[in-house]
Image (cartoon, rainbow, N blue to C red; front, side):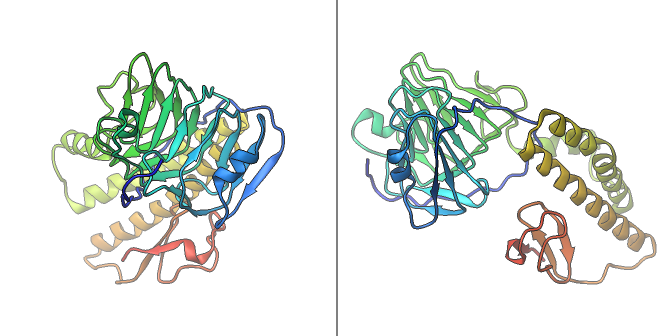
Length: 327
């Protein structure tokens, strides 16, 4: 379905989540999609039990699963793989009695503008589910809108989708809306305005600013630079010495490779941050400033380097182009 163009936005939010497991359809054939090709064409060509593997890039289209029990996933995750359906009422549709073995995994969904005249075309700009219960994991919904409800996702007529490890942010007028007898299950996700909703489940958070204000109150205000740096050093030390080793071990035990590599990368990066904070504290104690320099951050693992971005990230192996200059 087509509508007026809406310019989507992308949202990057870092979250720490435990190892997750989702239903996986029986594996049949695998279809491969690269930039310039159509995801919908691959869906149309697929059969129940198939997988569709999507390479990094932006895909300007809207998709409909057409009732198929397939796994549609990206190889690089939502930061590098976007379905931008600007000009469509719904970016993703499950309206043919899809069940949990219909899986959407690893995409940013943006640009949906449900501003049509039919009631159903005024709901669910990012994703519209009707009598369907798909599984959505590791996806970001942002920059979608609807006239009525469910800018991020609208579920209608006995739809019970499952969301895990997702981000829903800056969709209007709200992120998720369950119509009729529908009910969404949301766990380990960051959902704007979700705190008081019935679907706000285990491991969910609503806005990093809530945490920031709570931490500030707990600290009774802002302390001295020395004290704040020491607190940062202690926190980073706890993470790479105690917290992340436990996460890594648990992910390895469960055989969850994406979580294992994510936590392993985070462990290494937190140790680097620990060293940077330690240098800063020593500089403050000596009454001097750290040398002014350019800072680059790897957008895959968060590795932080000063001076020049390396040709290859020593933590995750990402290419130099994945480093963003921040100072």
